[in-house]
Image (cartoon, rainbow, N blue to C red; front, side, top):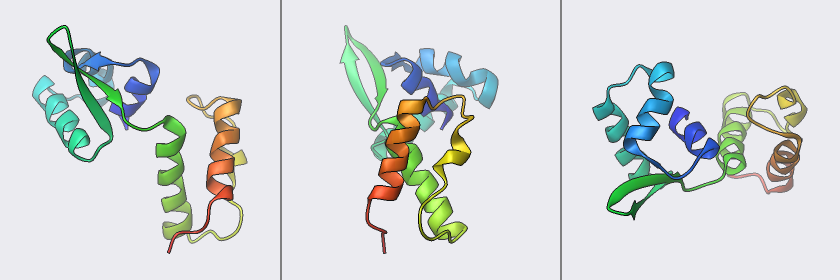
Amino acid sequence: MEVLKALWEASPQSARELHDAVAARTGWAVSTTRTVLERMRAKELVVREEVHGLAVFSAARSKVEVLGDSLEHVLRHVLEVSGKLPVSALSGSAILNESELAELERLLNGRKKRP
């Protein structure tokens, strides 16, 4: 999630730029950052492009999409919350603005429940 947060802030970024952005929070070696990026790429969470011969990465999905899926899974399947999901609990978030919160609420409470 730290990698995605860094990519949502600024994209595209090289593996080295991403490593520099997340190293203080993760404590990873550069090789670990590269391994995580390749695993995220295999899971289609990030995309890789070549820019002037340099591999750069971007998030494959928006912040709201990723957070919505994650929150829905935890709230519906782990905590077994039924009915409307309490997006208002996220109003103090440092990474979601009011527009993104509204979009997240539409996403979570406007889609059909998954089996």
